[in-house]
Length: 198
Image (cartoon, rainbow, N blue to C red; front, side):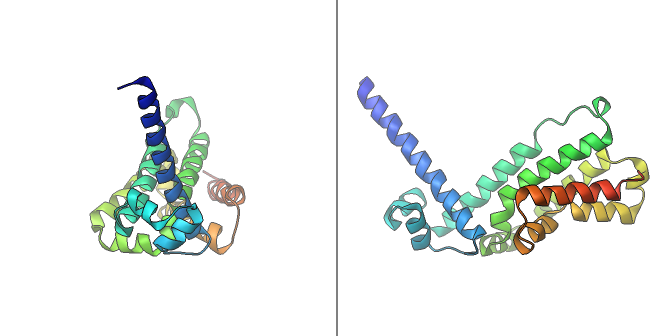
């Protein structure tokens, strides 16, 4: 293959990938602005492409929805799988700041899905054990970081877990319309006050 042809092909591949990502990004934006189940036409118009182009990237709306969920899951896993600093190198309070920062990043990537009907349909088709594994992982991280005095206080632990759950984040971002930075400050202050005597 000639060098010119290879460059053209590379350019086409890059444009295709960029359009694919733009479609997913625009779909997330439409959901965040209140259109909880955008149609192909609405997505195409907002992306400045035709519906025909949209369906070249995704065979059908179900495929687009699946890609949205997979993309968000991949991004969330990448954040959660970042190596966690050695607990002996910093205090548990420092560790909690890292937990909050990571959760905010994950929650922001998942927020459009959680407030859409797309997620409701996906959740209905997902087994309870798959859903429970995320909850267990989240709680396990808190158990590893928080001091024993806090983890043994069952009510206090449940309050902290609730404050650091995605449902509370959705309330702050969607219902109370706080910016990411203000909502993050709410989480930090809540955890600071709840663990003040820990």
